[in-house]
Image (cartoon, rainbow, N blue to C red):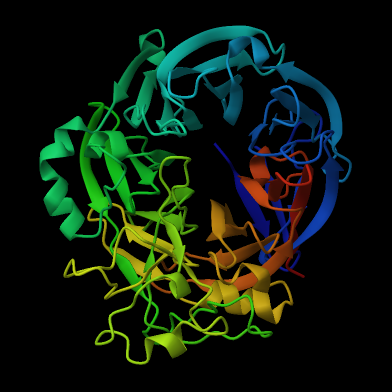
Amino acid sequence: MNKKLLIAGVGLVFSMSACHDDDDITKPFPIEDPADFSEVGEIALSGGAGAAEISAYDPATKNLFVVNNAGNSRVDVISLQDPASPQFTQSIDITPYGGGVNSVAVKNGVLAAAVEADVKQNDGKIVLFDTETYALLRQVPVGALPDMVTFSPDGAYILSANEGEPNSDYTVDPLGSVSVISLASNYSVATLDFTSFNSSQAELEAKGFRVFGPNATLAMDAEPEYVAVSDDSKTAWVSLQENNGMAKIDIVSKTVVEIIPLGFKDHAASGNELDPSDEDNTVAFSNWPVKGIYMPDALAAFSANGTDYVISANEGDAREYDAFAEEERVKDLTLDGSAFPNPLELQQDNKLGRLKVTAMMGDTDNDGDYDMLYSFGARSFSIWHGATGTQVYDSGSEIGERLAAASLYPDDRSDDKGAEPEGVAVGKVNGSTIAFVGSERADAVLVFDVSNPSNPEFLQVLQTGDAPEGIIFIPADESPLGKSLLVVSSEDDGVVKVFEAGTIH
């Protein structure tokens, strides 16, 4: 039990669970300000690009485990005993177990690593290690290309999102799947695919779900990207990024309950402005006749007033293979003159001409020209009702506008997916539910108070390393200093930064 005593007028919290010394059972730490995170330390891992992708933290050893695929695939172990001075201690070699590690997670002294096969279309595995000795504990077979792994909050299950990407010439397209590993049942694994939804493809597509790979069934086309688990460890939500959907899973019964199509965002509506050009010599957010495909990458689950919610980072991702590519610029399409008056004017480079859209959607009457335009990602984060899948909030154009105000907006990416919200983590700071949304292209994390899911409040922007990929929140009662920490690992420069919550004075 975490017993806290607030001393009025002093501004200190005494936490039994934050103590690590038997002789110091009343170790104080300040009341935290979630709007005042600041950088306190960093470490640059060897290798550069690919050297710091996804991170996981072990509260028992105070170690950080970081995916490093710069060179030989490994997991770097970083001591966070002093967050102001993270120290590399050693690496865990992943090369004996497959083609590379994509994700890591930690719970109860176990490190889980998602490892793809040497041939990505073959089944991968979750490899388990002891977090103190780094000894191999077990290898558990899962589906093709395990891209993300997580533990349920109660530690009873490990879940893996197995993306199942096709090969470059699209002759092999394995089923996308989610594996549920039961620790209490000797690590038995159930790998769930989406074949039962093949017959519902037309109905799901009508609601905004995308199935479009060459000769692919829905089950082949579905590509699980990320898993978020409810606080009670009974439900999981899985992002199906390229398909513009989420899957909902009953963990206890190990069944896929439903697929939730996410629909489209109207960039012509007030509040949903975007900057579509990287060649207009300015950062200008305006309304345009474009639909955004949400296409979430990372998800995070939280509860408010007894209701489950899911946050999605709406990055977007186009399929680009040797045998199949869906991306086109608006200026290279033939636009319907009725749907788009003055199409040639609209297709100028300083207007919509440079914007990348999918060629797989938009010809609604099948006459060879485009009646609608669909861009990749929604340049936002959204909050969805966990039970119904209904969107209760979308940040609209706020991410781009906040980054522009901080002189961090990446205008050279305006034609693509803008700031590309990719990662998201959520945690409690001083009683408030705080979301941390990573912008891959702006090299920043935006902080929001989402305690009221229908009306989040922007708090601040934090600068990170180059292309933040992994975002983890360490609550005060698990951190070395008894203060909430945010750890951000960035894949393009190998930098891991540590941010600390501020103090209310």
